[in-house]
Image 1 (cartoon, helix red, strand yellow):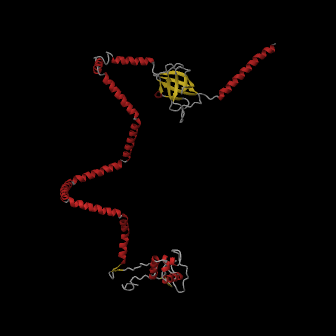
Image 2 (cartoon, helix red, strand yellow):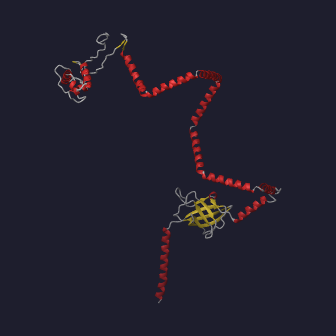
Image 3 (cartoon, one colour):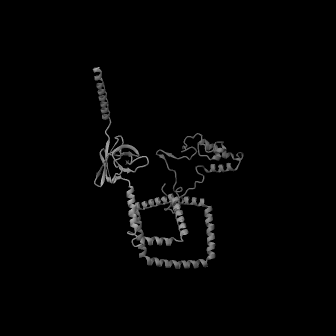
Amino acid sequence: MAAHRWRRPVAAATVLLTALAAAVVVARHEPPQRRLTAHFTRAVGVHPGSDVRVLGVRVGEVVAVTPRGRTVEVAMRYDPGVQIPSDAQAVIVPPSVVSDRYVQLTPAYAGGAPLADGAEIPLTRTAAPMEIDDIYRALDDFNRALGPDGANADGALSDLVATGRANLEGNGEQLRETLDGLSRALTTLADGRQDLFGSVANLQRFTTTLAESDQQVRAFQRQLADVAEQLSGERDELSAALRSLAVALADVTAFVKKNRQLLTADVAALADITGVLVRQQEAVIEILDVAPLALNNLALAYNPRSGTLDTRDNATGPYDPAGFACSLIVDQLPAKQVPATCHALAQTLHARGLPMTDQLRKLLKLPPGAPTAGPVPPGEPPSTQPGGPALDLAPGGPVDTLDRTLGGILRGPA
């Protein structure tokens, strides 16, 4: 029996020690709460145990409220997992229907340096609500300031009210219309606020552009001042020029009146000329394009030694006169009426690989523009290109056969 009594205290002590050890382990694993001190001008309704909230959510509690001269020091602690911005403010929120006063930390953390543990919030970053006594006191001070011992000591306030009543008496309709017009004006401004703000923005851009172009604007103003100064220095000459212009205009007016019919006829003729120029616009353009080249060729063709133009007629091109004459006959007569001489000429040119016109090729039933395929007889110079004119060859290479003296008549260098 005695052993049974001894076992009960031992078991109870064991359970108690186990609970204490578990509490110590849990306490060791929980991080300590952060501390914060804020200074207020007053802390009515705030006491130890009051909530500390962020966005209305409880994150801690007030630890102590201590007067410090004209301020009140409020010590708080909050959860270490909640971050508070380093520039946070502390505000005492007045009671509502469902809650007492509490301390609100604002704004919520959105990045940046967090508030350090043990930090203090100065009086400039705290706020306390106005009490009902303060409101009554302010109203009482206002009434006293307007009362017989204040602004109305000499009846000034009474005179103001009487004057206002006299001015407004009988003007109710005008006052209503004025207020209605003011309301419409404000409504119009509100409806056009986008345009108004756009105009202000454009004006701001314009002033910014002027500011950025300050040097150019100053230079323009200096140049304008120089021009004005120059005009001022030459005002006598300008006056004389204007007087002369007035005289000239008078003479022109008289001339136009005297020769009105002739001027009308001249203008009509000029209109005809311009019409012709418009209709011949392409021809005029071609003349303007070709005339410089023609003048240049004329200058190059002039022979200063003989005072003549050195030219050579090459109307038939690379074709001999007989081939040119046969080509004209082929164009004008049927194939059966073409002389046999032309047939023989075409065959000879084709056999020797000499240039042939399309008419002679047609006579031999060759395609137009096709190169000659006939053999080149021994001793004949080869053509530079199929169907093209032949060039004389020399041991030193091609020799220029162009006669620049018209067969020696001009006696120029060969």
